[in-house]
Image (cartoon, rainbow, N blue to C red; front, side, top):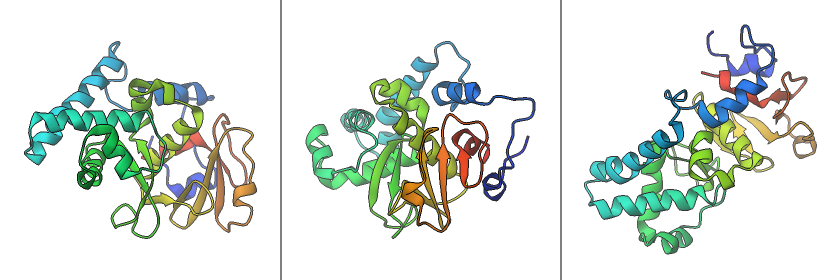
Length: 229
């Protein structure tokens, strides 16, 4: 099957051929579906190895810095993992890791490029500009379950999945009234019982609900955003 266009999805044109109930597959994807070796029995160990290689070797080699910086970068990642989603305070991150405050933002940028974290910026500059980071996430939900299972609360998982999937097709920024802003549309993320109060006065507002298989009106099932690419 091919990717689903955002416009088609918002008109409820989405399906997985041959799959009547996508939610069990979706729950498995959140834990084991992001990387191509997801079927391996040692999946968690392999993710941990990828993280160590990226943080302690690849990024330091790219930056031409010594291994001690790599260890601090991994420590920074773990601090992020145990705190997400949160609005980063650079001085606090510096105090917790021993990294100079002047370098924290640059290191987060390299970690983002390496697929370890994701920064949700405001709409002033966006992902390609100078927008201020409003929230910091791990890059994908599989990293949550491996690096910080205690942070795998459902709200964090839902927001991480949405941002991870939608950013592939366009610029995702922080909404001033809700969770996310994409292409002039506001998205509020929640569970089956999530209401529309926060987007009641928004012209192009959508509620993205987990735990539902089919959407209606301006309510879209969360799992469907995995079909964007």
